[in-house]
Length: 277
Ligand code: HEC
Ligand code: HEC
Ligand code: HEC
Ligand code: HEC
Ligand code: HEC
Image (tube, rainbow, N blue to C red):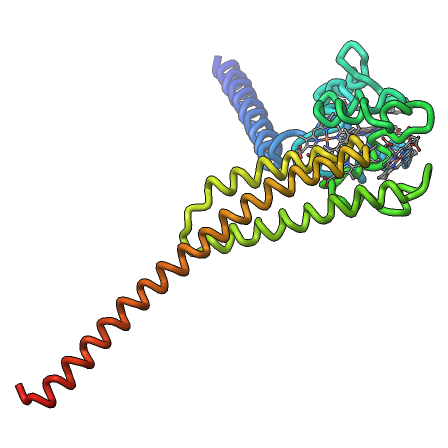
């Protein structure tokens, strides 16, 4: 009887101990996961261990604007980032690596406006027949914030002369410089407590319009639209000049009041001295 009780105690303790161990392990694993934010997608875990052709995309992607904005491998390629066995199953939406003519639609699932402009452009019309795709200009995995620096002689004279590109670049650089200058003046006004909200919104809209201009690659259209955009920018500039004048007038009025008071004080002083009041 005594022996049996001993065995029962031994059994209960063991069960309790192993249950405790399980709980501790689970806690450890879950804190490890939450310390990393979330478990790393299986695409990255597995691809990091593969030969260069398949691991280089991971290295390149890590410092891209997509990684920065939470667009992982599966955001572009589809598939199941949680399930290592079925990750690349078409049944889980895996799209594979797109062939050249499929690339614009592949990127255009998210960049809808750009795709529309691209498809109607001289570049889009030559898709699959020598025209550039999105990755020709932006790259595939190391895509960074777009800027006019993408328009350069090395990149744009791979297929034709740089002449037309140069015209587009010149008019866009002009507009860009105006936008940057206005932005800086708005920041300066804001820092002295002026209400700039309305003008900031206007500039934001104009800037978006401006940055959606390029993919048409139509010299006439870009030149014509640049004139329209610059006219909008001149309006914002005039509003800022108006603000400057108002602030100056207020300052002068303030200075005027002070000078007047000083004058009165001086006159009173002289009056007092001369008439010994
Ligand atoms: C267990 C390992 C493993 C996992 C998990 C994995 N891959 Fe792969 N992947 C491979 C191997 C191996 C290849 C090369 C052979 C092949 O194409 O099947 C490959 C190839 C690819 C290719 C190139 C296909 C082609 O047509 O050339 C893409 C794109 C890709 N993987 C994306 C992903 C994405 C996205 C995920 C996550 C949803 C993922 N992989 C998860 C091992 C993996
Ligand atoms: C912004 C979209 C995008 C993201 C995000 C992305 N890829 Fe890709 N990937 C592409 C495109 C487009 C291609 C086709 C490449 C080309 O033709 O230039 C490609 C091709 C590939 C290939 C085939 C390479 C070859 O040489 O055949 C592999 C493998 C691959 N990607 C893996 C990954 C992995 C792993 C990740 C996550 C770290 C990832 N990709 C993230 C767009 C993306
Ligand atoms: C001939 C080169 C070229 C091609 C082809 C191209 N782009 Fe661009 N892209 C640029 C340049 C240059 C800019 C910068 C324009 C600017 O700063 O206003 C840009 C800007 C962008 C932007 C930022 C736009 C914004 O509103 O700020 C996105 C997103 C983009 N491209 C995506 C794409 C996608 C998707 C495709 C394919 C459908 C594509 N690009 C094709 C050169 C190209
Ligand atoms: C799953 C959606 C998705 C797909 C697919 C995708 N992108 Fe993006 N892309 C984003 C997001 C989100 C951002 C960051 C926010 C932004 O700037 O629009 C971004 C940013 C960009 C930018 C920088 C925009 C800027 O403001 O300067 C470029 C260029 C770009 N992507 C090009 C591409 C190209 C080329 C492809 C195809 C190879 C592609 N993207 C595929 C979602 C996507
Ligand atoms: C992969 C080849 C290729 C690259 C790279 C390329 N283009 Fe083009 N581009 C073409 C083709 C093809 C056409 C249509 C035939 C033509 O007009 O020369 C074209 C036409 C143009 C046109 C005339 C559009 C029109 O409506 O008349 C402009 C402007 C242009 N490209 C600008 C650029 C700029 C800017 C870059 C660099 C950011 C660039 N291209 C890079 C292939 C390319």
